[in-house]
Length: 515
Image (cartoon, rainbow, N blue to C red; front, side):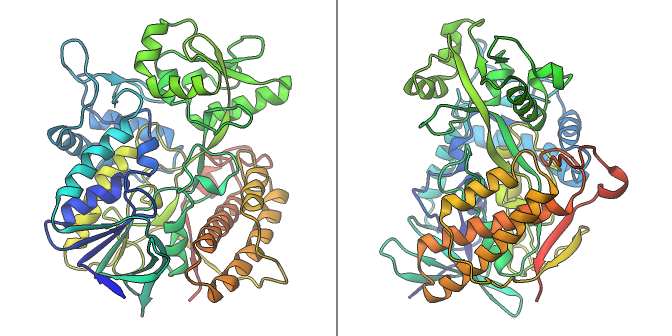
């Protein structure tokens, strides 16, 4: 049994929903989402959406900050698209009813986050992603030409002679179906679940990246993983994200003695880019052997609780008062800068297949994403991908260097436990990396991936095996890319190559299965 439409969207975050709205004006749209339609990384985005709409701001200034955070590897054309088109699409959201916070005079309230030179972050308290998702979902749900299949897990892309014509999926009753469409968009979000410690929800397992790679699409820049420096660090509690906006509003990172220490390692201090703050925390823990904390005790407690009610509630459940207590923190995997390689309109290297949002890699983030650019990326590039899907077919052009990937034999390897994969990635391909660890990770993940693939051939509708295949595949690709890049840049840090090397590594690399 199959379902048919003109367009297929896999994923229900900001990129997928924004694309579906434009696609519905041109034909029938099928949306596959493996959980509740409102459950995505979009809904977990607390801080806000960065956009140049302040009187002291401009798209050019926003672009400059984005390029600086990207540590030399941002694609300038992609950055210009993001920052130039951003205000238009955010105003559209406001017209549709997005309730961003406003000041006493009714003007949009703009927040400040790390590595931004001015206040430019729109927010809806500390649940901005959920507010944007609410607005987009209301419009999608009301559109007669959009059909949403929830609890529908995409298993593989349907590709014949290099052309994608849809995807197979498991529906809520456990049956395997096919969704057929002339154009397919991967908007499945990130892959934080590849790591043992992550701020991402359970659904962020990298399915879209893995499926695209399995179908022959190019993937790029996967060595660049952003580890958020301030995740709640309480034994037995989830690694709940303590938003960058906290530090933007004055929160301080302190050690056991109550000292501010980040500036000892990074001149910009607590508002340095995320990768720098995260490594400073790791180094301080190594130096002192003691925990580190986030504190807002020097600020007005009523303001803290009213500005950050969701975060305050999560801290309260863990036994802490955000406004008065030192809250224990540690870094956790948060965002993947790489993904399925696309051009500026979402086209991949496979005809008929498009990608947008965190699952895609346009090069807009370079080696390190600027805070609160993720929601804007999904909004802008989701809309652009939809426009390209409606337009006549056109081949994408890529400038990155390509390395083919050979399938490794399983060599007797058994199908791994999920936590074994995630623990290996955290220990050997995490915040601090080295050749020996990465070589071990690549070898082990290659064998595990082959073992999982062999098991999947006998059980093509097994949801657990799809998840495990995604984790082993994306983990392998991250470790392989990290081993190749012999320098430190942005979210990628090699202890054995601690310096940035523009002479040899000022370039992007892609991987693809050898045909």
